[in-house]
Structure formats: C-alpha cells, structure tokens
Length: 294
Image (cartoon, rainbow, N blue to C red; front, side):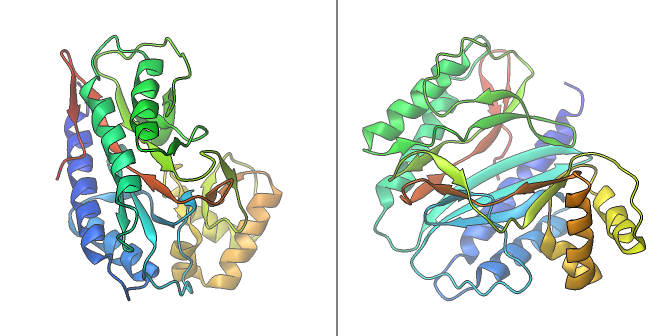
C-alpha cells in the first residue's frame, strides 16, 4: 500500500508520545505542562502534530486543549489523552485514559477492553454494525453506556475524520470494511448518559474554506494557519507566535467570514465520567495491523 510506511512511522511516534504523556500524568503537574512536553516529544521523535494534544477531564469526553494561561492542576481526575501525529500528512491517532483517583478502574477497563475486542474481530468483510455491537456489548457488560454520538473514523492524507464512521453501538450499518482501509477505532465509555453535547469556549479550530481577508493582522495569522495544511490547530500555538490580542482579532475575523470551524469541549449530557481508548489500524488480507504500537 502506498504511503504505508509513513502511516507506520506516524503510528509508532503517536504510541510513544501517548506512553510518554501517561508517564507525566501525576498529581501536582499542570495539564498545560503535560500537553506542551508531549508536543515537544512528538517533534523530538520526528513527527508533526496531526492535531494539538488533547487532555479531557472527568465528564469531558474530547476536544479539550489548554490555553496558554491555563492553570488546571491534575490531582484525582479521570484523564483522557488523545494524540495524533502525522508524517507527510499520513496520520496515527491513539488515546488512553488514566484514573488518578484509583476509584474508576472498571470505567477505564470498559473502553480499553471494548477497543481490544473490536480489533479482535476486524477483517475484510466485517460490517460497521458488527464492530459497534462488539463495542456496545463490552461497555454495557461493565454497567456503563457507550457514547453513541461519538465514533471512530477513517484516516486519510491531512484528514483526521473521513469515511467510514465506526460506531460505538450497534447501529445496524451493513457497510463492510475492505482490505487496505485505515481506520481509528475509538470507544468511549460513560458512567452517565452516553450522549455528549458541545459546550462553550472552544480552543481548537480548523480552517473550513478560503475567502479574501482584508486585515494585515489576520493575513499574518492566516499564513501560519495555512501551514497546518487543513489540520486542526489550537489558540495556544498562535498566541505563542503572535500574542493574544492579534490571535483573538484574527480568529474573530475568520469566524465572521465563516471559514473557521470551532471544536468546543464535548461533555456528557448528565455529567457522568467518561473514559476513552483508541488505536489506528490497517485492514489486512486476513485481519488487521495495529499501527499505533510503541
């Protein structure tokens, strides 16, 4: 398969970065420090960010990325770490959950075991609904709910969310997986509603189109954003380069122009704790290859 070695390298770096991030997660460290040290590690290993390191706490399932002035300190939270790395645009995406309270081992185990069980049945010809059923059965066995409106996804060049959509419950989808497809399987287990909603104060964004920009400030910031090749970015990275006033001005203008997509934190509807697990895999002739292995 063309570009498979780039996928493999990206997957390996993503896996190493995830293990590194998990090693940092201890009571007393700041969430910002974990993110920034992990992003530095990715660069040291020869990778580029497919999206900013995301660390979501407790009832937040995904899409939390700290700002430059974030002051959250880790203590006894449920911590979901989601890391994406690309090599020449080809992406490895993986995630894991750490329970610093030591009170929610089954919740962490539910999403991890759901991931493992889903991978165990992957082969050409398997349907998306069968994968979703395996994930749902595993998570509900532990007394939790799969998050139904979050899903796994296909991966492509400079594209972290493409077809197919891999459900986390049995949605009866009869679409089959074919050899050579690269997907991220991403179960979320919830102690609450198993439905998430978009909250406020997004810090992650993505350029969603092109339009003429009048402001010199916005053009400067936009040049940097264009260097991400359409991949998501966070406000913190822009603030480091341009400062907060210029960054805020540019993001407001891009939003007004309708070419800025926002990704606010995703929170469980009843504020139940959420765990996450994820691997990127390649569908092979007889089964699959896990690409995000350290």
